[in-house]
Image (tube, rainbow, N blue to C red):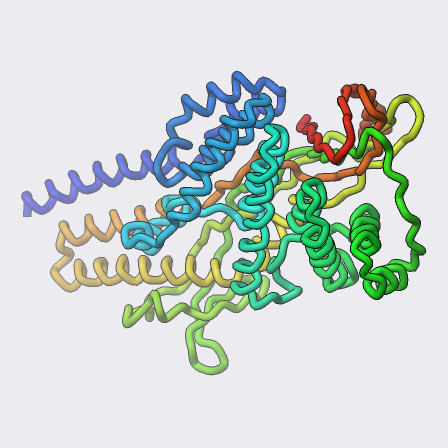
Length: 474
């Protein structure tokens, strides 16, 4: 008996150690990369780069995709486009190598999803193409940019197959198709550009109310589709567009200096935090076990995970689920004045804030079901050990194991709060005609308070289509 009590005391001590480990491990992903994040907001890109290199969490194998994406973004903002693409290529390799490994599955099944390898949100992977394509265009490597444009098609096909092209799911990315059209047009592939613009428009027009994740079809995109139809002699398509948009087509008069496509990346993507929700396991109308909460949400038990586990003693479980917290964008709108005369408005083309929140909601039912079932299985194991301890004359060893399981179950549950947090909250763009030679652009950025901040940049133009992007994070 004395031996048993000694073991019980040792077990309790170990449990306390484990408890402390989990308590200190409760910080969210955002909390643990704050140094890097703050430096990015303050445009201290060199300091941000150093902070990334010192961050051991980001360099763990399960977080390598995030590490490479952030490194690629930092080098892009520093103007090191070749190095930026080296990191994005590494991110691509991590994504392509995402064969589900047995160990990773077991971690997700018995510990939590935060401890699994990060696979990236689908909209994040599209943004890798965006930065890579711009990097190649800035380096004068148009053929490599075309490769990224073609990869956008492949990813859209893959997404469409995954969600059966449902218009109620994020089954296509309108912004990436628009970007693809611009890349094709810049390299003289007008037929491909027309197809891309038309596909992007189809995504907007098939969205409920014509609003695709908070964005309506940009006027620039409508004109580009009509312009390409006109160039290619697709009269029927041109007339259809004119009718759909209630806008007669007016042919654009090209300037000697060519055109500039400006992308404005405003704000930062929403932050993920942890939310705790209590669910109760009950029998539904059909007799099958379902989880429900105070809001009346009903989620069936996933028998594929639960198997033959005895769940009769499980009543309520507390789950940790991620939720997005919106970060306020620094500016509400922007115009650009060109050479002191013409003014163009930058038009919203992508709202990552809305996409992030909506896509999390779209898959919430499936993810909640998996989390709840995992918790139910863990609770069932805990109750089984405690019951065995009572049946064996209050066996101290089994009591200790039961206590350990109880605390492990309580503190091992963590929501996956990881995401690519330096992505912009929203993106806008404009197409601007240029004079031959040096062009002076003045961006007028308007804050929600009405205050206007000006930024100036000079662009050398010699004909053709050029690209320029800039970010305002704070």
